[in-house]
Length: 148
Ligand SMILES: Nc1nc2c(c(=O)[nH]1)N=C([C@H](O)[C@H](O)COP(=O)(O)OP(=O)(O)OP(=O)(O)O)CN2
Ligand SMILES: [Zn+2]
Image 1 (cartoon, helix red, strand yellow):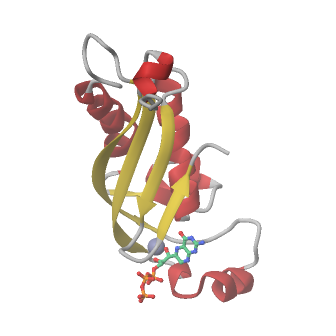
Image 2 (cartoon, helix red, strand yellow):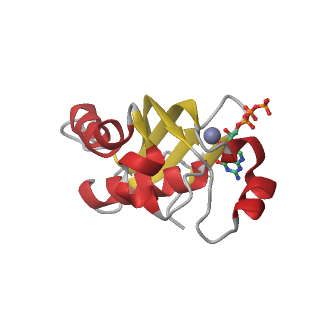
């Protein structure tokens, strides 16, 4: 019978490695491109002027070859440092709209939070390794972003 083992065929294996990071932040959904009435109609309670908060959960997935010598796609110690720099330092215990310059004119939806984290990580991780950012804004509201 033919050997369908990936390593046998190509000499290498590809794996996906995910690191979970939780952070807390407040925000208000409000678009500078809309009137106050439109903001209220579209975003409803999430347009409350004084904001509201979430305990976000970020799942960062990298994809790559399992290094034959180290047995790793990426050293988790290095991935943790990248996540600290891109997620924890700028976002944790912050008001996204007021403390993070990126969100001064970008609505702080979960889609845009995921894109922000993607853009930050893709700059500092090895080329081609970033695979997916998944953000849980609540247990029920989840966004996946893959850089498309
Ligand atoms: N497309 C998006 N729509 C909405 C987003 C978003 O990020 N992307 N975000 C919000 C608000 O931030 C809001 O906080 C969501 O909270 P809520 O609806 O209260 O959360 P739940 O669904 O978990 O709560 P339920 O009370 O069970 O509905 C709104 N829209
Ligand atoms: Zn919210």
